[in-house]
Length: 340
Ligand code: DAH
Image (cartoon, rainbow, N blue to C red):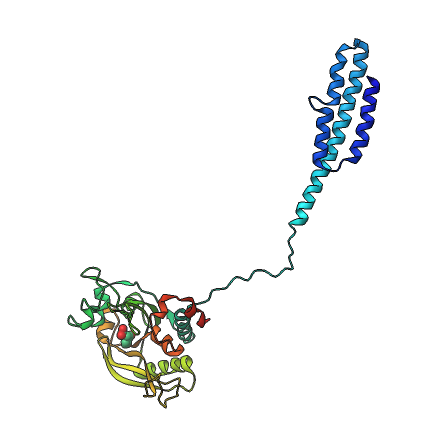
């Protein structure tokens, strides 16, 4: 039996050297140490030996078991780490490989135009004020001197929420809020959404954007209005741009005017953009009506002011040759991408 054990150990040593995989090592473990394994057989047959002999051989057999087990475990560990290495090699990341390009978004044309105009006014010392889109009838109409019978008050033009609350039809109510919440000198613009009960077509949308402006201080005159807006027009449409102020009517300004700019496409000769006239209407403006200043708590003996309002979509459409306002909101990527 001692011989058998010795032989088994020798065999095991040679086989161990020849092991080529984790699976072979596992098979060998079962063959030697498993329930029906060779060493188990030897241990089992020891029960017939004399106690003295059994003790010595038992010890030898247990030593053999430990030796084989340790050696096999080492082998298995080796195969496992080999396998891991191979897997890792397969998964290697090439950090020099060019990445999959992901498309970057960009500002919408309308936001670019609003930001550009805002930036021009900021550079001239204006700050930005904001007002709510859901506004009181009072701020949107009464405080702006629009009398009871003003056509814009009609249900067909205005989205009313209740009798006293509406979706603002213009950014002008921000004038009222600003006058009430701050003291002159005031120099603000207010870009934002406005709403009118219009059927959508190429030039109408029930929601669009305006940029409101308000300046109140001592000794503000029409000359300040013209100087500021002429400078803005030149920054917006180019230094050669000329401006022209035509008398107009707004309830909240007196006198009121509309400002035209010389056509930035033809320079004033007449073309399809200016419809042959050489001029393009850009905004409404005027000297703030004393009634509005009074509602805002401003001392009309001491202060005067001017205001203006322009449509952002209109400017964007004119400047970039967009012929349908609805394109601004449909977000067809083929349209949006043209204004990167
Ligand atoms: N709120 C006017 C509109 O929606 C635009 C406007 C005209 C605003 C003249 C003004 C202004 O502040 O002075 O048509």
